[in-house]
Length: 96
Length: 378
Ligand code: SF4
Ligand code: SF4
Image (tube, rainbow over all chains, first blue to last red):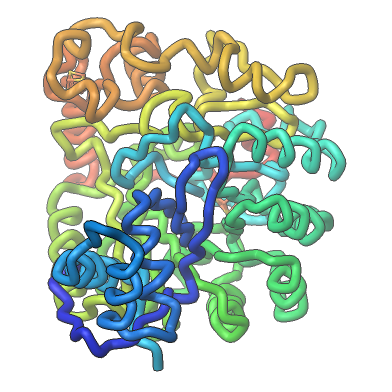
């Protein structure tokens, strides 16, 4: 089911409404909650979702924002790879 | 019914991430595989609204995140909506596990307003006659109406099909029905043989041929439907060589509270009669989860005997299901007899071949339906 899903840098993505994304203090981590499931995200994954999956910036614009935050920023290819994975898993969808 | 940990292993950092509360054992349906205890009628002392609310707070403090409202039929409790609202405010992701009998469009709207996130609706068949036979009631049409009403209200939905030999040949038709209804998830929960399902095992167990056909139909549908419908297929472990990683391990991430406040590592655990399970009315949840003898008994792997003790796979399946070990071998600390390495595996093979023979000979006995009369008789 989780076949490759290609995205383009110009795509604007948003969280799928069935997925709830939030900080969970006891886990000291961001989590995605959905029917019968929990995914605990590492910090960089959470940050990418926070910036690149809010339905406003394109993936390229989001990548630029992330790049400006760090001396050794995550490279765009890695961000794209994660976004495609998130898309394949149904966590995010193109903003319509 | 939520199934035994079918998902990938998840490190809960020692927290009961999954909290399941059984609001009541009452239910108008009579499913002959019901996961409630066969002696359910003995437990009438249901927790009050305030007791449940206090429990929900304790659960959040321990780190619970996913909350399942189940039963019995949870919608029979008038305070369900109030409890959902409370849980939502506390930060739980709230799931309702229901047969749909207590729902109507008005109640569905009220639950939505209360903050309910997801509904798991059970469906026993794509055909109203089979459904009637299996649940003892004329409920099929109502269930379909409820499925549409839930979708109209925008709930993400899991359609849960308890699979036995009576409906396994409808796999394809059930997939089509789920796609028509527009649900996101379809779960084929091949029955696990505990409690009522164990009582009726000889009648319910499918044959290996049926199972293979059903699996093939699922594989074809996944190809065809892709992301439109996610299909879960819970393998019936009698036909497997390795046990399931039951509940992700005993006391690892799952916590169930029975209607009378008894705390259990899984919904079935009450059947292990030589363990005395603590009650939230008498003990702090924190102590129950972290330190009670019942919850620590099979936590980790120090308790394991051979062949699990020296097995490389013990971190993956935790030695299987304690309830199954107890039911079939009489000792809950034995290796799950489903495992090919278990010295008791022949018990499973004997059951499978005896049932296959019954089918060949066309032997059929009436199902023992779950109801008060049958419960009292146990
Ligand atoms: S399995 Fe059937 S009888 Fe048991 S609680 Fe669920 S709907 Fe009711
Ligand atoms: S022997 Fe025990 S640990 Fe090893 S595979 Fe079997 S059940 Fe799992």
